[in-house]
Every structure is written in structure tokens, then in C-alpha cells.
Image 1 (cartoon, rainbow, N blue to C red):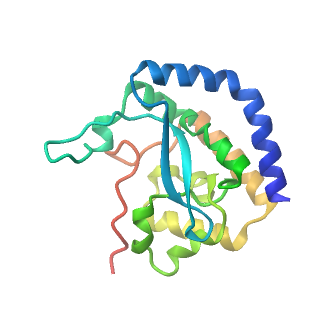
Image 2 (cartoon, rainbow, N blue to C red):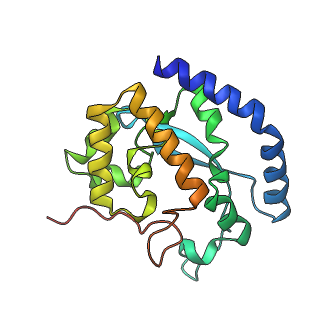
Length: 196
């Protein structure tokens, strides 16, 4: 039932949002960036897949050839897109493909996989989502440890009605522009592992 709901909802959303998607594609392209960010992320049981998002940052490097911090690479357009979660719209194609669900633990970076505790790694026992229980309860203002606890709680308690609740809470947070970034960060600080 969850997969059918995901597929139908994503298809309907794309059919309604395609004019907005075209406008955002045009605006991002005018800023000279690649239109889409295609990044490898861990999916169900940690199996890698490629996630699609609209580009919100410039590819700027320091003298050592390393990417500058997110805060220095974020564009004005990128800030606007993230504020209203418009950069996430291409992930509806991931939902149709079956890589993502509408609701589930957010897929993070591949490099985080070896840093999880055994308990935190259980977040991968559910298909990742565009939004999740952690996003509905603080988004990027929640600490990594609390975020993982919320993700694992979702894995153990997922249901259709909980998914509907999370979707409505997420929509509310997007309109209120709540929890977009952690204090002093463009998004979230990098996860470096849970202190022993």
C-alpha cells in the first residue's frame, strides 16, 4: 500500500508541479550552475542509488582543491529554493523509480555509513524518504544523535497514518520556513561520528 501511494502521489505531484519545475530549471541554469545535483546516497539496507536535486550551491574550491564550506557556496537562489524545499522536487522521480519513499529516514552521505553505531545504522531498515520523522520534528535544528533516534523510532513504528501525519507536519514547516538550517550553518554541520 505504501509503494502504491508513493507512486500515485508522486505522479500526481509531478503532473501539477511541472510548470514550477520548468521555471526553477530555467532560473538555476541562468545562474550558470549544473541544473541538477546527482549524488550517490545509501538507500534501503544501505544499497547505493543516485538522488536528484536542483543545484543550490556553486562549485567553489580552496587553494588545496577542496570544496569551500556550504555557507560560502550557497547562492541567493539556492537559499530561496531550500527555504521552500523547491530544490527537492526532482526527488519525485526517485519516488517513481522506487529509490525513495515520500516518507522515511532522509538519505545522507555515503561517507557516513562507517560512522554509525549499530543502533543508528537501523535507520537503513526502511526505504529512505523525501521527508521523515526527524524533519517533522525539527528538520536541521535537531542534533545528529537526536535525528538518528527519531529515524530509528520511525523504522520501528512506521504506518500509513504516521506517514500522513509526517507529510502534513512537513508541509506546515515548509510554509513556516522552520528548521531550515542549524545555527551558524547553511544546512547542517558534517556528521563525524557519535562521541563514545
